[in-house]
Length: 356
Image 1: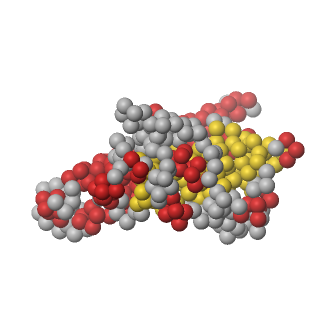
Image 2 (image 1 turned 60 degrees about the vertical axis):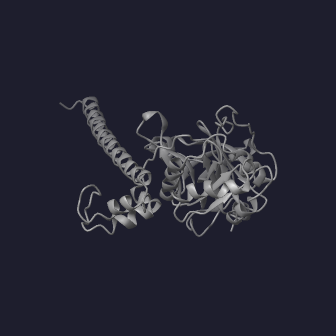
Image 3 (image 1 turned 90 degrees about the horizontal axis):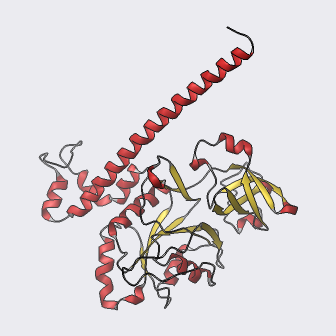
């Protein structure tokens, strides 16, 4: 095994037919350039022309955490990315701006820390959304609540209880980046060669947490605004760091809104409590509205299930169904345009050859 690649999390059992000598890992992504590492040296890289022509969309391009096959130009410390190796997990969201396109956040992750601060930023509906996205990625979610030092000890149980109502089976760790409380609990997930990503809104303490876990200042930080507790954007790109423990840590820019790209099955996992009630309905196709024998409506009436939780569940399912319709429409249009272009090219070829 390539020991240099092992430091970056390489596992040859996943890529048995790939020569480690041509492999590198994506460390940062900035616009159309990449910084990659083979564990020994870092290179400035770009994708090859063949890669560019074969790519069908943004999701095909490298992202932070990807393993890529490259052609190295060692003297120039540059490289050309030939292709991306299969991903064992990938965190994806709907691209911003209303464009129907998947945006990769990071790849080949073992665990994702969903970071939220114990101030006005604490939003359990947003945490629900992140949990769905993480389950869909194939990684394991862990909720990290920062700024523990801002509250008295007796105030914390009520705040944690709010999060527990939406984090069924998900570990919750409360930390202080100032006092260091709870940091040791995070180290449980920072095992050698494991890759952990941090996601959350701006100002929740992700960059500070990266510095604490790295035991050095690798990320710039800013305080939140005092007037509204809102974060100020500090991380402007995604970057992978190697920790002293041997774990790999990926910091990502703040995402106040997380539009889901896919994940109906992940919704079922994240809303296990709702699914348990739904599975007990008398009718297997129950819509949980006015049907007799609806266990969900019974749970809502008795208080076993909160209306807010059920509304959120339905909202996410509607959102995903709508997104899928848009994706299907886009795929049909792209296929139609592809065949039109192919017919146009064939006609041009016939004309050039003098066929009538």
